[in-house]
Structure formats: C-alpha cells, structure tokens
Length: 218
Image (tube, rainbow, N blue to C red; front, side, top):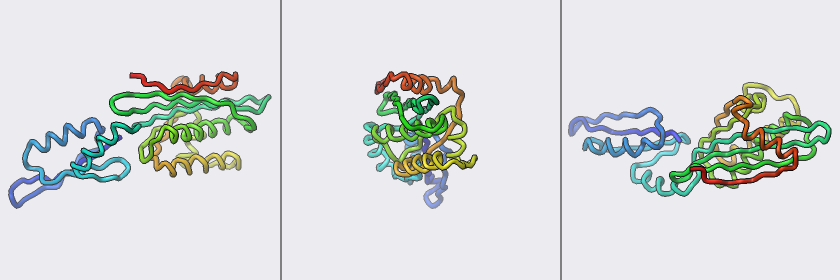
C-alpha cells in the first residue's frame, strides 16, 4: 500500500512550515518517521494511506501491529475458458498477497455450467476471484486485478460500453462486491503469456482436474 506523510516542521520557536511527502511504499514509512523525529524539529506527523485514512504517529504504530496479522497488497490473476459443445466454462484464479514478512499464493479453479460464451466465463472468473479474496479475509485495501480479457477490464473501468444483458449482470455483481469489500481496484490488461497460471487452471477445470491450494511461498 502507498502512504504519504504530512509534517509540521519548526523553523524557529514561533515559525512552523507544513510539508507533505509524495506517495511512498509502506516499507519506507518507518524509516522516514524515525529520520524526521531525529531532527527534533517536528511538532506533528500525520500518516495517510491510499484509502484516505488518517493516523497520528501513535495510532500508526498500533495499526502496524494489527496489520502484521492481516493480508495486504493483494494481486489477482483471473482467466476463463469455454467449451461450446457442452456450454461449460473453466475458470482459473491466482491470488498473491503478503502477511507479516511472508508472501502467499492462493490458487483455485472450478467448472461452471450454463455459460453462454467465453466472455461470460471471464466475468465469472473475476467474480469468483473476488469471492475467494473475501474468504481470505481482508477489506479496505487497494487491489490490483490482472487478466488478458481486455473487454472485461475496459468495461469495468468504464472505457468500453457493455450492451449484453447477461454480461451487464456480471458487471453489476463484480462492482457490488468491490464496493462491499471497500477495495480500491486497479485493472491491468496483460498478455496471455503473463496470465499463464490462471489460464492453465481454467484449462484444467475443463478437464475436470479441480485444484485448490494455499501456500506460503517465501
């Protein structure tokens, strides 16, 4: 998560200057807080995150302890495949996130019936990815969502219109879930090669090879 600091710097006893940093990675916040305090001229420090939440330094210290036990920095990959002959879809989901000093990877796939086309499979994959993230248990966060379906991601960004009733229903479900979890979503279109993990899971689901794993990877 990105954060910024607002500080009040005492130039003289009666003169103070308000300053604000750029958005910085969370890992550098502690270093800057300690460095500013060493000057002996800081009368106030405020920490602000990407979600607009604001803390004093003492409040932020308590927050850090809490965050050590919660998932943060989620990155979702999704993909959907469709079998025209059977009208079934295979969906693949890969989620990376951090907790404490460790990184975790969650993988899942599923076979879904009564799909109309590949586009619907892609929407279903993303919706199910968000459902899995909800089960992992973190809200009120920025989240990066990556897939090779340009149509899905551009429609979610509002750049492309969606005229199909079925797909609009999926759009509504996805947007509602993002809102319920209070996620600040960033959508990124990637190549099929970059999405190979989710793509493989979707293909395996169509072959009735159902997978679910949740591992610490470093």
